[in-house]
Length: 224
Image 1 (cartoon, rainbow, N blue to C red):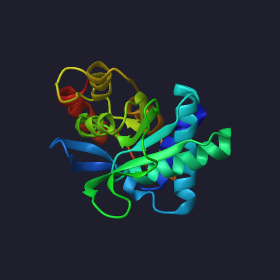
Image 2: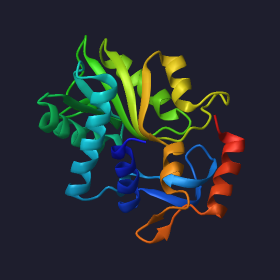
Image 3: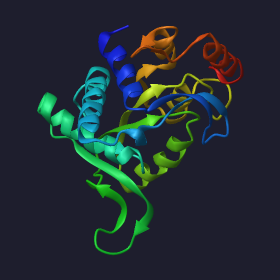
Image 4: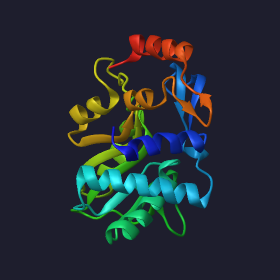
């Protein structure tokens, strides 16, 4: 595993973003692990997070894109932090854009925050995690309704490696097949297990044999 991936996994743990236990997901699934990007709350954490995303996007999709789109709500700080990091690391002035949950009818009207989308824009979507693909189902029509844009790809923090809405292939693969753009993640859940299973973090084992068995059982039902 690349060293920056191990660093990112430990960064998620240190920021209390990646947690283990029993959680009910938006999809209704009961999961023994959970990732919550809303737990990044300090300037230093967001700056570091933006650097990880910027590096992953740069290595995966290159620099030939114009806009980072972060779906509301958690995608908003992700897109802002990553555009700042992209400018600092690579000297590229990428615009940020997000959607509102409700259309604003006064002042800065419309459904978008940040940069307006323009015909011909090349867009990278940035999210925290995609469990079932439902968020892209909501986001894609918004992008298509605003301008004739080309979606370069999707970047998430963690590939949970589980079935999407169709119940056959992973959510990220399902998005690729349904919408025709690439998908990627900074790390996968397999890499999380490789990094943390029976290995101490600050003197504590986060994934012991019991939790590993629960994760294995989860993947027998939902794994792709």
